[in-house]
Length: 270
Image 1 (spheres, helix red, strand yellow):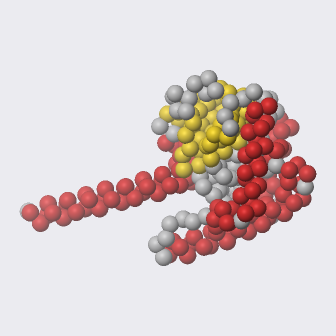
Image 2: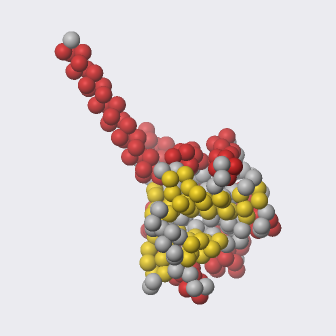
């Protein structure tokens, strides 16, 4: 599929929870004129402590993005809190990928969007960084536990299930935090005269209208494997690639089963 723009965030390369293989599959099957990497692409917090992981698939993701830049795509990288070290390199190009603090994106239908990771509007990250790091370690534990739960579910024939996503929707405080985050980001967009805001940071994908301002969150590639794409007419659409890949695998299995049944019938008629 070819789009005008693709927005990705919260990939967290360097962590065990990064779904690099699914992202590679997505990048292989989708092209765009412009890519926006909306923060937390590399997890420098994890790199600075034990538990850092960099398998070949993570390197392949970087190479795939560099290849797209080499082939002529424009790619902008907006640092987040986990890769904030890149904020020291604003304006720098790495293999054709430009590092910018925020981006001013205009869609094909003329709507202007503020593109920002969003951590600057998270009071915990800004005012209590130690608490954000503590929460990050707790999050790592949940992802570790989630991996083992899903191994058991796989043995029983169950589908992938996100413990962290489930927990977010069960805890009232988390729901309230997400709501307040959305309000703060849309208010910032309104103050800047934008029609909408595109962000990441909270790993909660969404596209919704909030009092005339379009709030867009790209989600992540740890829990949900989501991306936002711009269609030719300027509309923004959310893609859940984990669900899409699952449906594709189901269709492939169904087609193989049908072919096998047809072959059996042909042999019976011989």
